[in-house]
Image 1 (cartoon, rainbow, N blue to C red):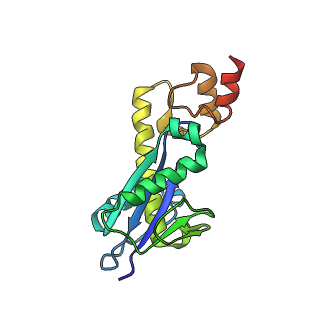
Image 2: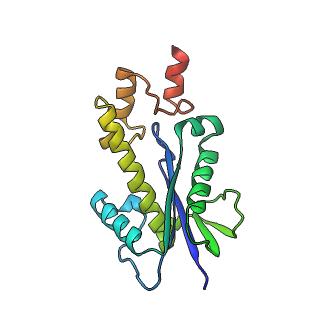
Length: 189
């Protein structure tokens, strides 16, 4: 039996928080209806599908790379690290790995990068959903720790609101110091 693992990330372009990745091996005996690119789904639909994936997939894993790792090795390498960790977290070894994007991390299992794979490959769509839901949950937790930042609203992305909060309240330990405008603000101090 050929087992395909789909892999995708969430939070690569954010100014705050860890980058997340997920790996999913779906079960053909239990198809999950409605899988799509996580960015095309409502939060409620993503959460529902996330539960379905966790219940019916043959194997799934969610991993992350920290803000410090992002700042130390750069966002691309940190994303690859999170993907490697997610793949290693699968309790079943896949025959092949399909990764959303145009580049691959170093892997010991045969792998292919598929541009816009989160829109066309069910396994990657499932991974996209798990990674996005997990990352959003982590940002909701950050909103409780830092209530003056509206992380539940902007999820750490570089929105106008988030940039205003950084200027008004300062840089937090969860901010990526290597990303602008955070880096520029640090240089001005």
